[in-house]
Image (cartoon, rainbow, N blue to C red; front, side, top):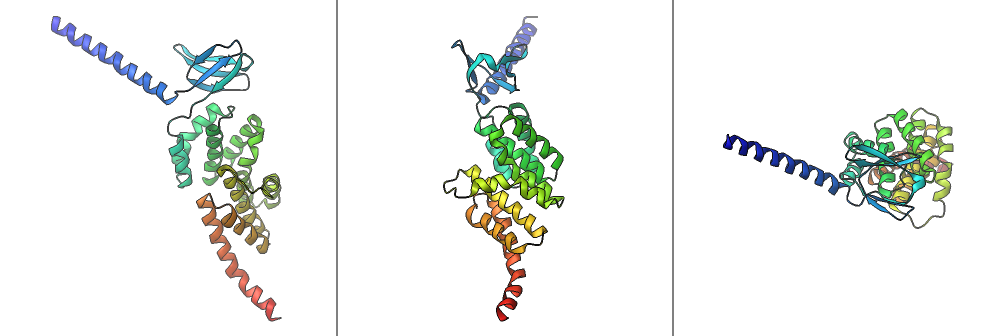
Length: 258
């Protein structure tokens, strides 16, 4: 009996320690989450989501809401796996990245943390690359409503969907603000360089689809030469530019002979 009691006790303590370790690991992943009430009180919590009215946080009994009207400041720590997932997007592993980023983008869409914004843009890109245009449009629309200043970042990917449906004029119109923002901008953040690079790449596809090969070539070269930070877009743009150059050379030579 004593031996059996000891075994049960060891198992119970082990279970408590294991549960504690899991809880500690979860907290470690979200270290830095907090909000400060307008009364000045700070609460270090695990933030689980948000919407237009409330910030949600973890409690022993489940998620609890805290109205934005009561919050003076807040912080959302970067979640584990985000950087690796963003790298997976750049490597073309779209489905793999989407599995990690989509739940986070859905939960924290309203929160203007840089890593959240990057994650949402990546989700739109992944859906687009996987030709899931309806899903891409839905995420982009929600993002634009929640964070209007970030809408330009997803427009190039929405334009990809329009171009794929041969709605070239609609795609060009969707990119107008992005292209306008690019003009004369010499110092770029990595996010801006990627946004502009994708925009001009898609513009090139639109002009190519409309039969304006010279404009298409200019757009492809703009991505390849000026906005090369996104290696994948730059490589695609350069390949398309090289193909167009070969196609245009006979026309140029013929014109010069005349």
